[in-house]
Figure 1 (tube, rainbow, N blue to C red):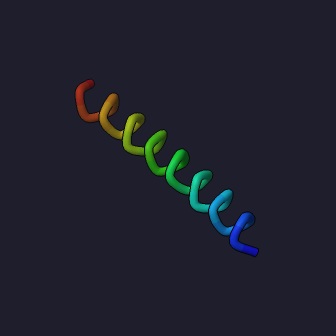
Figure 2 (figure 1 turned 45 degrees about the horizontal axis):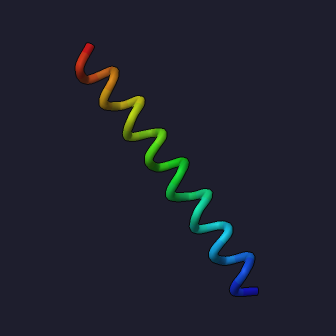
Figure 3 (figure 1 turned 90 degrees about the vertical axis):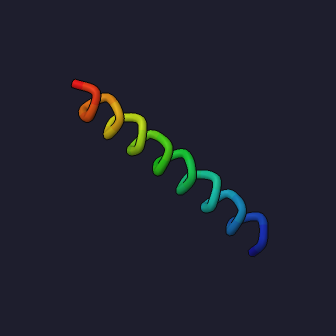
Length: 29
């Protein structure tokens, strides 16, 4: 279960980082 949890957290962090990156681009534009 811990392996699945860490994998899920990694995916969530990547999604959040990608979202922030897109938000930053839109904000800069």
